[in-house]
Image (tube, rainbow, N blue to C red):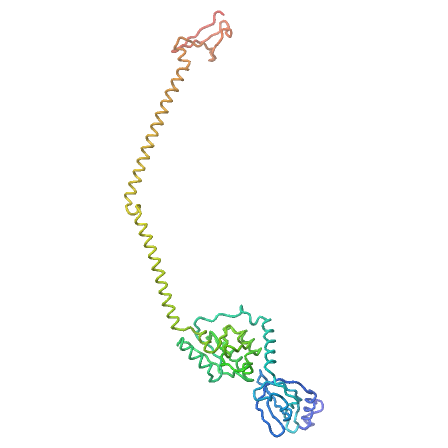
Length: 401
């Protein structure tokens, strides 16, 4: 088209719109899923708006009344449907719309099957694992609350939390909690609260509803946004029997908004009672320990060594004196025995001494070298010898053999 047109040779509007209509007509027929809003009927034609269940996107749809009435049950505002449509572009008005040829309501069974498939996929990725969930702070400074505008869930959370801990602070994000805008608004509010460093925990609250009403809280993008949050998230969607996927990914699930307030904020009365209880318990424990220690001290003080320490010293002194006297007696006895043994040994030595033999009239003949002569045959004539007596000695010479 750019090659065939120019400022000097432009195409008329009708030609451009006809080309757009031809290009759109090539799309053919498609099946589209969405939520019906603004349903009206005029004559033999039914007009409606088909809104995307997640994004803020919608398109106009027209259909013949017989096509609408042949769908059982008949769709109403807010119903989820699958529509077989053909894209049409109205050249005269320059507008785009779908023409419906068949409408099929999405039943609860099919919705549950889709949710189950999504749950299995997310579970396989570990999004619901308990090891990735975080503990809630004991006393959050600021609590982020995502809820509907002027909803009963908001009042339940605020009133019960402030009744339990009057000083608790809240940052409330009021958003759409059902319909086509719910997912986008809840996700945006979640990101804002998660980025706020003052917020210690986030509560997502809604006061129950039908399966279709709670579908936004099972949306995959919202579930992944909760899983990626830095701040712990508490899910308080619906009642005990309701179980959207947000309950599985949240760090803590509360059955109701009131239950969420009880789990996030401690009760000041209970905490004071616990403090008193622990203080009394500590007093009893310390009292028992002191009594045991005093009893031990008294038992130690009653022992003789501490009751009369001088007596123990005297007893030990008596033992020392007794041992010293005993040692003296043993040593004296040992010395006497050794002295007697020495006298006996000396008498024996004297008796066996050569000097004693000499005293009886004997003499010892020796050579000058000191060798004792035992036989006369060992001597030579003229050899000099020494004769030893008990008190003196004399030199002699051998004159004959």
